[in-house]
Image (cartoon, rainbow, N blue to C red; front, side, top):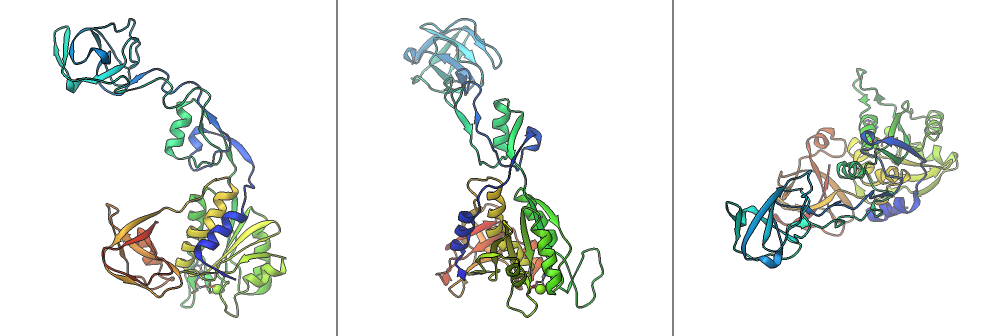
Length: 393
Ligand code: AMP
Ligand code: MG
């Protein structure tokens, strides 16, 4: 059955659940993984009222006015005394606000004169510092199960002293290219042959999605070979096949999968490139039959299959990196398909220009673009300057 793009993505997200176990790894290895434990603050954050500015710690009620400066406090110190009425303490960014003070005034708004400081404006309690526990209270959850660990999450783990972290295991994802015309990249192809680029691009995409790619031998366009390769692939956590899913006489992937008792959730999606996209389950493993044209393989992985790899390793909210930009020139299409077309997004992210591409076999167009223009299947015309969706590459 043919699904719309949204239906196909929803189907994958609904069907696939967490199936990977967990392991404990060091903080240095954590980037790119999915968190399998809730992380709690080990103390209040900030642990003391932390000045956000260089300036003077004051009592807001004393302002405007002239105050006696009775000391200074910098980051890494505690001021030993407290700020009494009519007094101020010089303070640096990151330093604890002394007892008695309830605001910090930026140095730019003060005039220093010996041991006195003149402040001509008023202040509100709470100005320019973060109260103790403002960001998190000791014991509060600061990171949740199912989040992708990126640089900010690593910073949070480091902040709370979590140097070992429980994450989901990486799924091993088998990659099986198919086709009698396919030779390996290191080989010299005959005129009628094509180097296997899909295994290479899929391996990168699987790694980016947090999986471990396992490239298996290419299946020939012959039933026994295809079936044997599929059986091998189903021994990993997920199977990706490229090619052999179109309507051609030698497109044997679906037939071989069916013979292995596969359940098919869909075998056609109204997208371009990549219409003959197959998703199902066999021997308790999910598989995708990705169309073989390199552009189709890349796009169907990125927009549909990737979410499955993310979900089996616990990612709670697989998302597409979509944004909006204005078209640099008019664009039109025939209604009916969601298209993902190679394009150039300007460096300020404001405008998008479709790029010349000679179809889904054009690896060069895929390599030269930095984004994909994403069309709405119901719309046929866009004027120059109209907003359109963009998927980052
Ligand atoms: P298929 O989906 O098997 O009909 O393949 C469609 C087109 O993609 C054909 O022109 C193939 O030569 C090409 N193709 C298939 N598999 C690969 C691959 N692994 N690497 C590069 N091109 C491929
Ligand atoms: Mg083929």
